[in-house]
Image 1 (cartoon, rainbow, N blue to C red):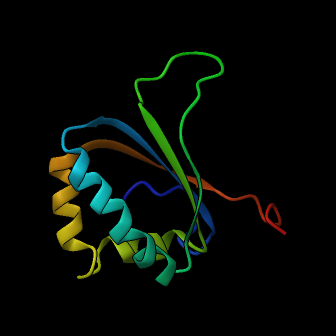
Image 2: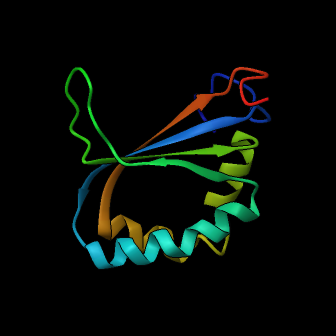
Length: 108
């Protein structure tokens, strides 16, 4: 992935900021469909929801998931199983996605 400043073999938290939902029904279907796909790549959702304690955000929701490697996330995003859902998500919501490298030993 261009601009990756850490090893693709490193565990990551993927933080998805939901900026707008244009089609709530499609987003519900999307969330239900991708959860088992993510699990197949070793990922698990850690949080869903948003409460801004300090500062400002333009996000209306956030989801954080743990991935065993950044490459696992990239492989899932490029998979044939995800492709139709990626297209649906593009029309259903605007998001911003971040990789947060996990500090070694943080989840042990």
